[in-house]
Image 1 (cartoon, rainbow, N blue to C red):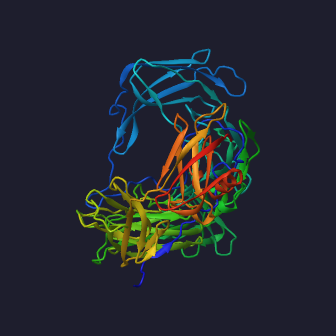
Image 2 (image 1 turned 45 degrees about the vertical axis):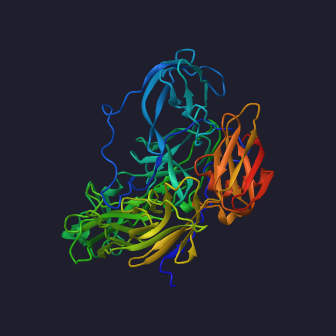
Image 3 (image 1 turned 90 degrees about the vertical axis):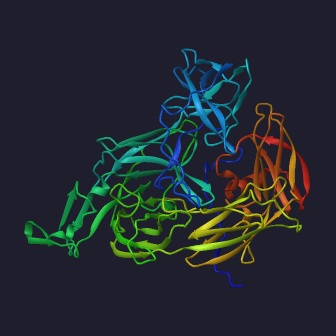
Length: 622
């Protein structure tokens, strides 16, 4: 049978979240993190409906925390000096069940007094998160061992008096000056500290802390940073309003400020001193690309800065890079030959996204769109049409290489996309209760122009997914009790730990095999005298399996009783297990982290189908 869907093995780029030794210094608490340079978050859309989600929650909508008889009392001190941290903000948030998880619903706040002491009373029994923060310090959640690590909530009972002390660390700082290409200070540029995080989509840049503007001397200072490795990025918000026109012989320039690259200067000829004439087909557009330290528009050429606990690095100055920024225009046409209003998104390999100008993320009513100020690079242009009722949206995708020249007059024809005809079966031939099972195709490339079809399997275990375009992984949910996914095959090829890439017109047969021979790895962790909680990481001793989609890497939190349990690892000849006081977000599938973990772990074992292993692990404190 011919395989029409290309299989993409998603081996994560070797990216580092903190790049510290496995047994390195303990870090502080969390720091606000958000995407930098990427697309706005967009929810997937159900097969029979429109976009999920609704309006944001306002303070009036937000429910208040439940009241009760429990209380939390504690003290906040400086980690280095031991002195009280006065007027630190303390926030407690109640966790309520929602769907298959928990969400914060309502909260209580207070401040520390002159001795760093705080108290929250009248709290309801249940699960709570507790955070301490103050400007210049690294925010921390109670129980957190690292800035980017997860922490377990605290559980309060009626009448309980819970003690919660914090040791906040001063944040690190990076400072310097931002200059333009002439060496003059650039005021009002946005400067951001970014780190790399390993995800199922590969390495992505993540903003840490808050972007700060440069002042009138070009000076900036980003503060409150946890220890780790960072890129410094600068983006001039006025760049989209600057067009530099250069005459063909390079002898004269005209800079237009406050205008818009959306409006072609070609509408009329511009003539100034010396009778030098500029016309649209003879000129070059220059703009300022997002620039990374020490002064490059390409993040792969950027230099990482390492910050220790509370360390400050000054003199980190960089000159923004003038580039020939491109304008991309085009029109989206439906399969019926008529213009289509659709979502459009231009995405780089590192997750930086661009959407059409004019305050919208899609085309105009006549299907036209314009993307402006696009720096040189390799991109994918994704188009997602509207879906009406149960009909999946038409889609299109086009690779683009931008080299500074405008790309105008693109015509993008959408189509029905690829489809999956799927079947869920049991490996022992038994009949499964599959009516509750759902299958979702999760796009690996996030962005506004994405489509995540899902379907519920019928009583015979069949399902259909349509409108696919690009790379997807399959997520099988609501499995019968005691069953896990054993394998996924696309047209006979095993894609259990890989993504499938679909082109328009592909028709793929998928077979999902379930098994009730579930493996289990459990045991206990010997606590350190100072630390009891942590995470157990179990991973295959095979670097090719260290990816964001791999089933061969799993983690489990260590319970209050020191025990842990991990179910559903595939059979493998050699697994490695290690218990660590904390694991940061994305580290568990980071090849560099796993390589370091392998070097200090002393427990390995084989696992057969349905096999069980009971381990006794020492807790390693980083």
